[in-house]
Image (cartoon, rainbow, N blue to C red; front, side, top):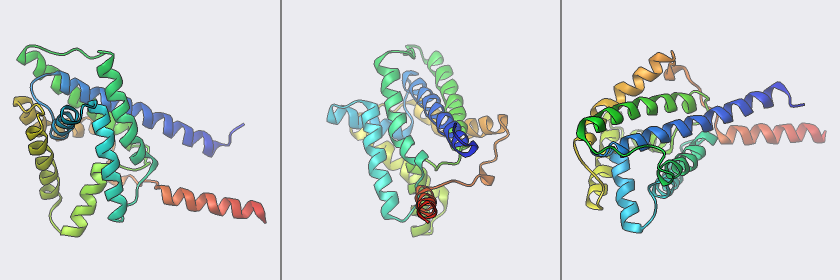
Length: 225
């Protein structure tokens, strides 16, 4: 029988994966709203059109590149960081290939689906961030760039989103009124979801991979004695 620590860790991992599934559903809802994509999704769609891959595969590939940059810049990563990189892209493709979420063909239905999708993204964010196994790759890169450039977080985040948006648009990604809607409302929507679950991200301490490896090493050393 597993000890309480192992059971708790299993619970955290399952909750994290459910969070990725919910988060990805929210992303596909915004994509299928069909009124314009979020900046990073514009980029992923542009990559998918240019390289002949799926949006999920583009998300995974870009996530891997950003994780490598995080490590190069000295940022700690958690199992959640790696899970974010892999599972969100896999779930996005699963939803889109199986046509689970409808594509809207009218503007106002698109607006409703996009706003609902942003709320779902907020719930997914709560589920996977609250387990404390590391933030997403892009958040890690943002922190690394803030530390290195000494620029405000808003400037760095805005620059990252802007570069992703313009590059994705040049590659053929869908930019529309929905893009502006997402940029203006995703923050409040995520904040509302966190408030709904009484989740204060400022008090969260993440558990990183290097800490787990050190703990495992100490455990093995004790067993050998």
